[in-house]
Length: 258
Image (cartoon, rainbow, N blue to C red; front, side, top):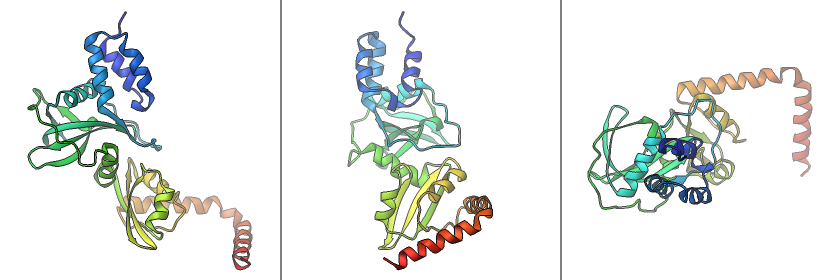
């Protein structure tokens, strides 16, 4: 008995495209009815996976597998998407689906001004009928996953922050997961980490893991969370002042003898 289309798509998409290999899809094609095979092919051809996910303390947003399938079909057929998006109405040319950070994005171009943007599928409310057919004008560098990472770092998170870091951009880039954010050079010894996350707790933990001196001045909620974490860590070692002082003295002596 062949599964309904929605159930097959839900199994394929339930945990992100990372768990759906091209080999598994190829095998599945042979047992699917033609109508569903076409939808699975559209999905396979339309999706790119971003870098490995980082953790979150916020529940993953629900995305209807049928919506993902509809967007993939629009990409395949070169048909504009019409949808409500955060109190606005959009009509755009879809080019690529990107699965990243347990989120689904469609990278699309607005034909009115030629601007590009990633749109989160869990924030979209489709309108019917869709838009017109369009002649493709792909993203200039063709790297849709990198585009999503850059744009989300600036505007796609629930919490955004610009973190001045007392280190070179090269050093910070060597320490972060590409999913964390974008690094802007200032000079040879300073840079700014443009980052964000689902909550201030996540951002506070990420920047603490840099292992570098940094500064937080905004947003106020993040300043408060970093201060709270600092106090919590200080209390955690409150009974170990003697050991910490001996360790500090030992480290200083080691530096002086080098």
